Image (cartoon, rainbow, N blue to C red; front, top):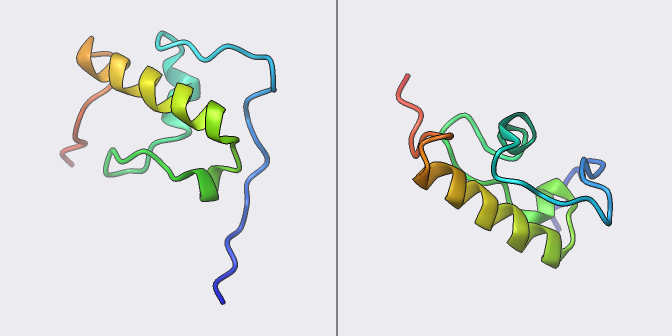
Length: 70
């Protein structure tokens, strides 16, 4: 059995996720630019869906990169 280290959630229950808040969204993205899983972030399913939609919207508007080329 694999145990995952759950992070404390950085988002409050009633807090709105906004695609303009880039500093908050970068905490949920890996170095490669992938969105972290719900298991590793400790978010609820509803929060994870909102997070994913706001990250994708920020990528389309060029606020976040699709890939981190280093």
